Length: 361
Image 1 (cartoon, one colour):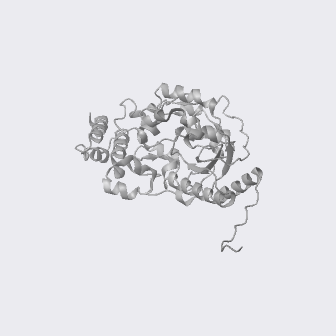
Image 2: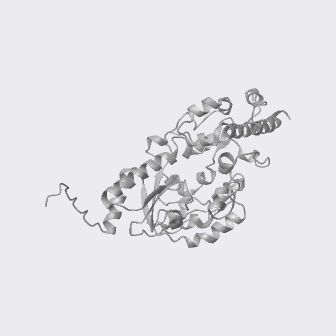
Image 3: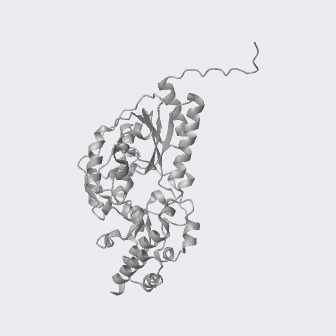
């Protein structure tokens, strides 16, 4: 009997190995430099995570403690998960001014090189969703959920388990052929893909990252105390920066790259070919005085689409006030600080007062 409905042809069966090969090809076409697959067993990381939280090393990032062991148990975050696809994408912009030259010029502001262009959360999430779209087309209805530094996920542990590199003593992922200047992203899935083997570690006896940390935040191999970390202080920390740490921050106004800049493996790091990660607004070499003059409206307009925008104008001014306090004593620097001595924000006023104290007592 003719029903008026045309039966859809059944999808041909795809072996797990063939599925993994297709996914790898699609990922490469979407701009990811590497891909790997891990299972969900992160039990080896649970004790270290609990110990780190118990020591308070997460600072005021309360969400870290709130999620607890969910980070180490992927199936609790996304029920049905049996595999995690990890990807990496290079971010170092080819057109950025030399990082060490900017750090050496205390009249300039230093912005971590991952934040010079478009917000990586948006870039990677978009690409991961495109990858999920291709997988749904070919493999049908499965669990697929994308993450990139956006949920309780142990990104480095999963990427290391998936063979994308090893955890360095600064806690970032390292790869022999790519260093550490890359973003990570994940897809949680119930697709029974073959796992990729983990790689070996190659830090040896090197402690350059530990020795180079300006504030001593890397308190031991593979352990960072966020409460001393410049990336945490300039981005995640909401209030007053501890006074004893302010002189150590130098001209770093958003994030810090020091532990990566000294890593021997980063001589193999490759620049990004992604237009989204190219330098915007001259943030690879900005003058502190000029940045401090930005109004709230200018901050919102110029940093639209940037990861920096999420810290808000108040923290931006707070960070720059510290850098101006550490800058050479010039009339322009002092005048810039005095221009915000009566700022509406108590946090900004406090850091401006400290900055002025470094110059005029």
